[in-house]
Every structure is written in structure tokens, then in C-alpha cells.
Amino acid sequence: MTNLLVLKEHLKSFYGKNEIYIIPLVKFLVALVTLLVINGRLGYMTQLNNILVVLVIALMCSFLPMNMIIVVAAATVILHLYKLSIESAAVTAMLFLLLFLLYFRFSPKDTMVVVLTPVCFFLQIPYVIPITMGLVGTPSSIISVGSGVIVYYLLAHIGAGTTTLNATDVEGTTQKFRYIIDGVIGNKAMLVTIAAFAITILLVYMIRRKSVDHAWTIAIIAGAIANVLVLLVGDLIFDTKISILATILGTFISVGISFVIQFFLFNMDYTRTEMVQFEDDEYYYYVKAVPKIIVSTPEKRVKKINPQRTREEISRATRTK
Image (cartoon, rainbow, N blue to C red):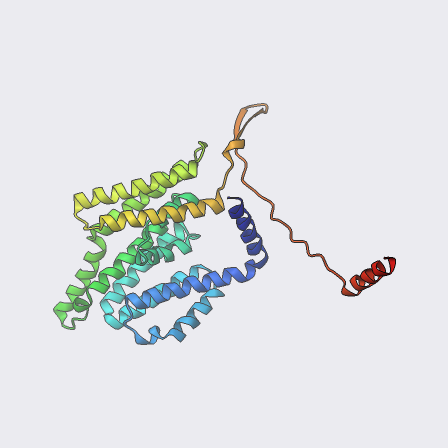
């Protein structure tokens, strides 16, 4: 445990010294993974599938504000869908505009969440998002997480209906609009997932703010159980056809990742908890103080040996004998 705490302090020190380089690198990696996932899921416009184009766009995003990654990702999706059909691009653009208005109004700082939610779905670990945002976010994070869920299900729905969206006749045009709109409004699996993630975020947020010992640990476990229960109940009621095994396995992995996040952000020593009482002219205050677990990193001492001085000392010792 001590070695892990020392590693944590080393990582914090390293980040503090190299923040100016780490942040652009993180932006580059997030943009790169996002674009690769979009191209792998859609990929209708061959020009955007070129790895050099992807690298250049990701490099540009590393020097732009974080919110620009969402704009670039949305533009990439629309261009791919435009190559597939104008109708799908138009509906998707209007949906993205609506989501942007909600996102920038209520949770403009959750850029990473909007981008990572669809990516985590493709990686089969989406449940880490609501648990993590319950720990580090606020109830308004429901908007950003919900937006990411909608984007994922929209892309999955469009990818599954390529044949329908490739129709060229007039009747096919109407069918395209109906197909895309029904995939957004009438997708019961998407609605159940949004409800499960919203309940998980609220539950984790409320529990981790309590003053009880090990609040974050309790919040993680309670959020994971609530998420699975809501998804399973939703499957029973609406027949969403979710994979129970994949849901449970993904939840276990998400819980493990959440505990890693807790270790770096909220590592407390409950054995040294103190209850403090003080007062002013109007109130009595009863405060529970829980110290953080902090270890000092060992300092490396390098002893320099002067070869010339060492030879002189050996020679002097020999003469003495």
C-alpha cells in the first residue's frame, strides 16, 4: 500500500512539472481515439478514413479548447452520414444542434464525458461513466452523459440501417427520415440506459457527499448495483434485449476502474477521524475531520566520489603503514 501511495505522489509531482505537455497530449489521444472509433463505425467518406488526415485533425485538436473536440467529432459524423445519405446527415445535424444547446447551457465543462461515453460503449465498459461522474461531477452531468448515450445509439442505429438509408427513390426518402427519427425517439434500450445512468449518477452523488466513513466506496458499490437493477428491470418491462452477462461483467470492470479513480482523488485515513466543535455568536459547529493519506516521497541522494582524491587517500594510507 505504501508503494502505491509513493507512486501516487510521484505521478502528482510529474503531472505538476509537465502539465503544459501532458494536457495537449491527452487532447491528442482523446481526439485520435474518437476519430478512429467514428471511422471504424461509419467510414462512408473514404477521405476521412486516411490515417494521415486523422492524425492531422487530432494534432489540431491538441492545441484547441477541449470543447472543440466535440465539434470536430460531430462534423466528422455528419460528413460520413452525408456520404451515406443527405437525410441522415440533416437529421443528425439537427439532433447534434439540440444536444449542443443543452450541453453548453447546463454542463459545458463535461467535454470529456460527451466524447468518452460513446467510446466506452464501443469498449464494452459504459457503466464506468455514470459511476465516475457521480463521484467527480454534479447532477447536471446527467445532461452530458445522456448526450453521449444518444450519440452512441444514433450511430449504432444508422450503422445497422445502411441498406435502408442507401435507398434513392422518393418513397425511400420518407422512409429514411422515419427510420432515423424512430431510432432516436422510439429506441427503448436507449431510454432505459439514460434512465439507469441518471439514477446511478444521482445515487452516487448523494451518497459520496455524506459524512459517513468510506462514503465513496459505498457510493461506488451502491451505484453499480442500482445501475444493474434498473437495466434488468427495464429489460423485463420493455424487452430491450440487453446481455445480462455483458452487463454484469462490464459493471465489475467499471467498479474496478472507479476504485482506481477513488484511490487517486479521495484516499482518506478513517482511523484518525476527529470530531471538532466550535462556535461563533450565532451558531455551534460540529465538524467531522478526516485526514488524507499522504506520504512523503523518498529523496534520492547521490554521493559523488572524486577519483583523484580517492587515489591520494589510498596513497597516504599506504605511506602511514
